[in-house]
Amino acid sequence: MIDQRFWSMQRAAGFFLVLSFVANLAGVLMFSIRGGAGGGTPPSYTFFVWERSFFMAAVVLTAIGFVLLEGPLRKTNGRVLARTGATAYLFAGILVVAAESLILSMGEEFERRGYPLIVIYVVLAFLAQAAIGGALLQSGLLARWIGWVTILWNLAWLVVLLVITPADIYFPILHHLMPLLIGSALLLRRAP
Image (cartoon, rainbow, N blue to C red; front, side, top):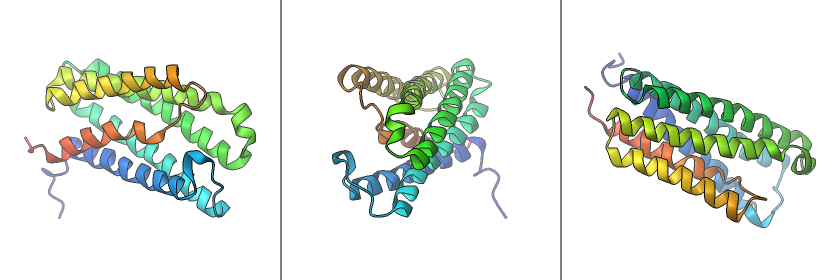
């Protein structure tokens, strides 16, 4: 029998957020194995499909985690930012899953025609996670420093990527480190 005290909404959110990091890490490792940013060709199409699928799964799991996290934040001062962040990340996630699917079907043609979807995802995802950080800060659900780190991490990377590398701003690992931090804190938190 499952202990309902352990599987609260907060713990479920934490589980999905940590799992999203694991899926993203698998995609990053596969990307690195094939040469990563150096532009290495995947050893096979199947390898490429698995790599991109891990990135898509990570985004879906993060969206689920943020939607679940919004529940416990409804009765706190962070409710507006929590709803805003979860909704914005859900929309961002839909865009990047569509973009990743296009990468699988269009290949290099995607770079010319589909890259704006990636740009919109990156901007929305960073802003959504900054809003989640603000919600955590206002709610008192987790330590205040987790809210601050989440806000600063996301806004700083958004500015850095848009200013320094505007032609290539898609680094999926950057979107999954704060969910790992938040998810871990939720899983380690004592049940009320």
